[in-house]
Image (cartoon, rainbow, N blue to C red; front, side):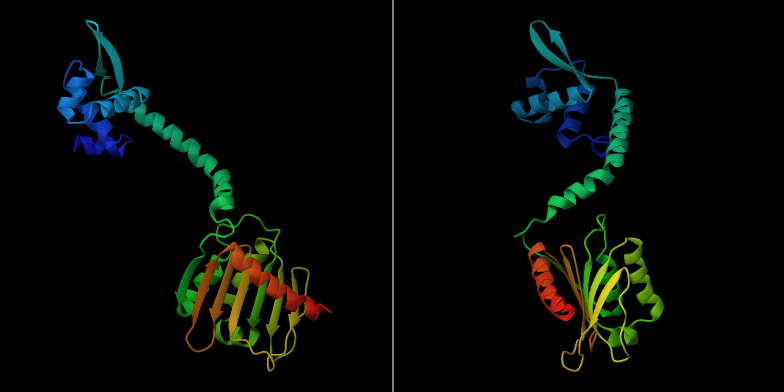
Length: 249
């Protein structure tokens, strides 16, 4: 039980074993500790050095030999307080570190991360996930959607929530859509072009943003696929731009 507690506050299993072995004696040599803990001598040396850095073990000389002794158990309080200070400091730095890690986590050429979502609720989860942990709002989101199917599947307030989330992050959009009941004009935050739904029918809602691609199936069985891959996203953006630029002409 004592070893488990020491591990819970930050010691390794070997550090816990050696420290408790030292607490039971005035001092001990590396050979004594190796016999008592059944650890190899090189391992004991490494563990003792680690415990010394944590302020829990010190050296003493017995005759001409170096022995080791455990610091009083009260030192564990100091060790825990120091751990808390380090944890608090790392917690403060986390907001700066997360974007840096995300910047290197999935470079070009790595295996795509693919997630599947089932049902209408799954589509909502996939839609909300497109801006998850997003900090940079300079890049637009590229959208392809059948407005009629979206109107049928999702009430206005649900669609408005996603749009508002995008606007709150100041993410502009470029959109291609089909719509039987007229046109949706462009505005300062969205550039839109209507395509012929009879000639080019759409039954999927597609979003491309940074290194993410989301494809939601809106006809028959509702589902979504989310793909996180720089290569896939860049290819999809290129295809989108070919169509978008052609409509602008």
